[in-house]
Image 1 (cartoon, rainbow, N blue to C red):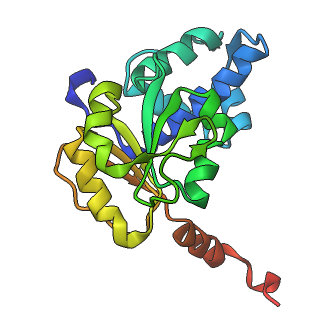
Image 2 (spheres, rainbow, N blue to C red):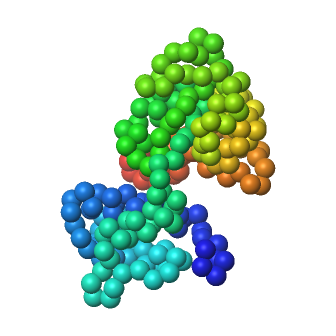
Length: 212
C-alpha cells in the first residue's frame, strides 16, 4: 500500500462496486467513463469515488476521464482478483445450496471448489456440481485445493468449531453467515453477513407513515 496507508473497509467495499460496474461497461464496449458517470451508476458521490482511488495512486486524465479497461484491471489487481480464487463452502443446507448455485458467484472471480457438511445423510450427495464431503476431511482436502477463502453457512452453535477447523486447514479469510461472533487468530479476517441485523436496520428506516 502506498506510504503504508491503511485503507478503510468501506473503501474496499466501494472498490468492489466500481469493479462490478466497470465489468458491465467493458461488456458493453464502453471505452471511457467519468467520475460523474460512476456516481450516476452507483449512487456513490463522484468526490468519494476519486478519494477512494487516491489511496492507490493516480488514475484517469483530467478532461478525458478513465479508461474503462485500464481502471477495471487496476482495481482488479488492488483487490487481488486477477485470478479466479477457490472458495470452500461449509454447510450444505438451504442457505449453502442457494450460495453454491448463485449465478453471479459461479460466473465471477470466485469458484466454490468444495462443499462440506457433518450430516451423514448429505455426505456423498450432489450439491449442484459438487459432491458434499465430510467436514472431518477438510484439512486433507484443502492441502490439495489450497483455498484461502471459506463461506460458513452453518447454524450458530456449530460456527465456532467450523471456524477452528478452517484455521487448522490454513484458511485465512471467512465469510460468515452464522449469527455469531467468531473467535479467530489475528491473521484471520472474518466478514459477517447477518440478514436479521440488516432487516433491523431497514426497519429503523421505515417511515412512520408507512407503518399501519
